[in-house]
Structure formats: structure tokens, C-alpha cells
Image 1: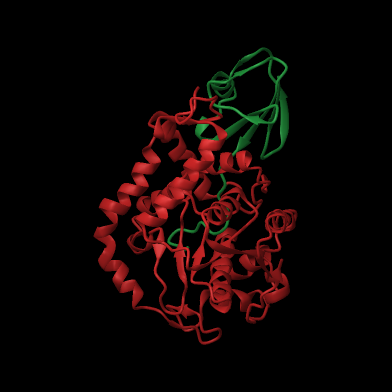
Image 2 (image 1 turned 180 degrees about the vertical axis):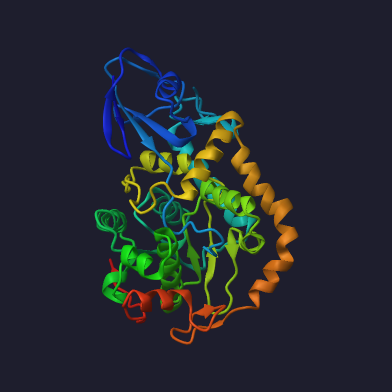
Length: 73
Length: 311
């Protein structure tokens, strides 16, 4: 399957079909830090991904401006 | 996996709630969590005029969407920060969101209004970029809220943001910062009330909300934030969360209920330390506020904010 990752944007190919959990383990990605979108549809961690699926692993962690220690908002 | 509500196919599993949801019921869950947060901390009412600080990212657009869905009168404020290849595309997401929904978006560009951008401002002030950026934004939030007659300023800080800030403050035992960390800061010293209605929802949930609700948002991370301390704290907390779901929520919300009262005295002392900035009049613990010092060092002018209203 084709896996699209971001920050930095890149595409990797993974052989075979597998569950989301197995895919994330294989890529060493923490499931709390990403969404998995298969063929344009959000899927839960027990979803099974076919060998020809196009999968986006979208990082959800951001940490830029405005999050300052002690900031009053 | 089945939706906890309708038993249809789930699109997301929330381990800390031991629950799965279909798209429709996940959106409803998020609305309920925000309502619960607003009620729990007495943040605002539907008679208040709200100003939502929007960056073009998932959290701020999601909270703007949720609040308007819940019947609140909420305008947006976007601040152009002059960060190459980031600020302009982020602004487009905010403007498109507002235009598509007929919402009012106030826009302030710090290069046009104040004569500096975040990269040059942080260098001139010898501050970390995120520090200069956050401080600039907070100053402009206050001014626009006051000039526009808004009762409440809303920001999209979520559970992960607050847990990471708490983690950093505890690591260094920043007791004065711990005293200030709360989802609501009351109006005082001429500053508007500030609220964070997303503190019951985490980043993954906010990203999922946007995907399900069809909200396009800026996916790229701010280039100035790469590798910062805050992101490392989030990574550490997510490692704990993966092994023990619910840890982030317990850490932050139990701080509010059990830990924060120990810092209440320090919070009271901090409230008495502010006086008007000699240059701009904003409340500050010094003669000249940090924002005016930054603008001066960056070679700009501390001019008042002018509102640009977009339909």
C-alpha cells in the first residue's frame, strides 16, 4: 500500500495488507499522535487496510506560537 | 468497531473514553464536550459577543465552528505574522472558512501595522521565535477585543496544549506560571475575559473533527516551531498516554481541581502587579510593556490596531 506522511511530506510503500495498529507499529508511529485516513475516509485503529490502499498518516501534534509557558492565553 | 451511540460503523476510537463513534455522533460528542467545558468553568453565555483567535489550523477553526453551531455570536481574528511560506497560506484557510460560512473575520498584519515580522522581531528582541510570536499575538488579541467591543476572547488551546504547558511548568516548578494556568482568565486591568473551551478535547480529536466536518485547515507545522520544547513535552506525554489512556486528562484536570488551589495565593498577588504601559496603555508589570519593547527593538512603531472587517 502507498503511505503518505507529512512534516516532512513523503510517500513510502509497504507490502501487504494489515490492520491500522500493525501499520503504525511497523512505522513506529504513536497512535495518539496521528489520524489514519484510508482512501479519503477516516478509519479507527482496528480497521483493515488492503494491500492496494492509499493511506494518509496525518500528524495531529502542533506546537507553535501562542503556547508559551506561563502565558495568560 | 461500532459507534457507542448508534452501533453503526465507527470512524474513530477514543481510548481515554473507552468509546468509538461514527462521524455524526463524534461531532455531537465534541459539541457536548465544549458545552460541558463552558458550563463547568462558566466561560461565557450566548448573550456574549465572542472573538475567536484563528490561525488557520485545526484547533482554532474547529472551536469557531463548534461555537457557531452551538448558537454563539462569534467573530474571528486572524493575525498575519510574516513567516515565509506559512503565514499567507494559513491566512487563506482562515479567510476561506469565514467566507464559506458568512462569518466576520478581523485581520491584522503585523508587518503592515507594526513594521516587523516574527523572524526579525524575535532576533531583535533576542527572544525565541515562539515567545516573540505568542507575545505579539496576545497583545493584538487584547487590543482588537477591546476596540471591537468583544466580551470574551476565545483561543483554541486544547487538552494536549494545556497538559504540555503544565508539564513544563511543573518540570521547572514555575509557581507563578502555575498560578495563572486556568481555562478562564477573568476580565481585569482593561483586558478582556479569555477562555479555552477545548481543554476537554485533545489534538487528535480536533483533527478528526475537522476531517469529519469537512473543514480544510493548514496541515504544515510552523517552520519556526520545529523541534521546540513544547513539542518534546507533547511527545513525552503521548508516550505515557499510549501506555495509560486518560493520563493527559487526569494530569491537567486534576491539577485544576486538586493542585491549582495551592497556587491561588500567588495568583492573587500577580493580579495587583500590573499598571498601564507608558507607550500603549496596555497592562504590564513594567513601565513599558514587552510588546512595545519588541516593536521598538525591531524598528517598528507601536501604532494602534486598525480593524479590517471581512464579510
